[in-house]
Amino acid sequence: MMDRITVVVDTREQEPYSFDSDKISAVRKALPAGDYSLVGLEERVAVERKSLTDFVSTVIRGRKRFHRELEKLSAYESACVVVECNFRDLVDGRYRSDAHPHALIGTVASIVVDFGVPVYFCSDRQAACRFVEEYLTRFHRRIARCQKEMRVTRRDSGEE
Amino acid sequence: MMDRITVVVDTREQEPYSFDSDKISAVRKALPAGDYSLVGLEERVAVERKSLTDFVSTVIRGRKRFHRELEKLSAYESACVVVECNFRDLVDGRYRSDAHPHALIGTVASIVVDFGVPVYFCSDRQAACRFVEEYLTRFHRRIARCQKEMRVTRRDSGEE
Image (cartoon, rainbow over all chains, first blue to last red; front, side, top):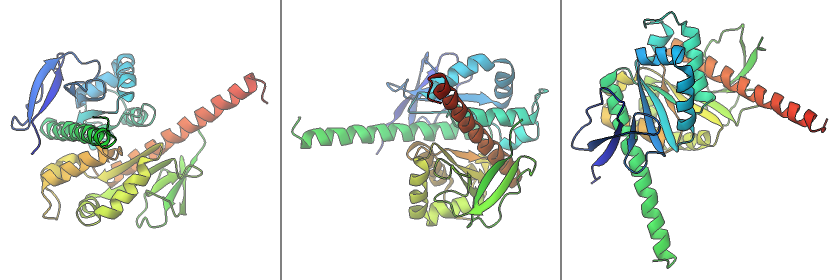
């Protein structure tokens, strides 16, 4: 049985996800980067969430601030951008902006390759919420496993 | 102006992408991991391509081999899995298999978090081809930039 995990939702996040309350409890707190993280691991894991509209306008108008955000995220053990649309929506220009699909696809590749921060296209808000739940749960489990292994190693080497 | 880049397509890849021939030429060669890479950078960058059907059956039946592949890819500077479907298709179980969506979403999170290899949902074959083109082009550009900077540094320090 896994314990319930505690997700930190950034205070600036305006419409936070409703996570499965059997598995996840949520607290609000200002995060150094991203919109979702885990208690105690705020500078090791984070998810930056974007609707398609946010993503396009950030990339076009808020470039500088977004780059600072990506630089912070790129230093994390695990961080990603989650976009609530399909990749096809970008390719076909299904957004309200004059931005050319080529430019947007180039930007996605740049975030992924130059910043080393993956961009996950998660179809819509509900599916993206499922992804974020699973992503943070999995990261929490990885950290818990590492901590357990370290305790076993310390005990076996007589440090405890 | 960027030079045309040369993509390596693994010999086992049965229906290779048709890349934009103005930008990319393709050669066939056995790759140590993945289906697409760049000439001379075969152990630094790679893309593993999967149709939705491939992805589901690999995850269910070919687990061990896939894990070996992911372990190799995780050691690369830049590597990813590209799936030719939307994330929604997984969430809604739009595939021919008894596999439960929960299990598949869990597997995606595991590939991403435990192996550190991003999984990009690229909607369909044509959009995925665009993504792979841009991903490899961007990686090539990054390497070219680094090499240029190294030459400048060497010249300035009088090594040349």
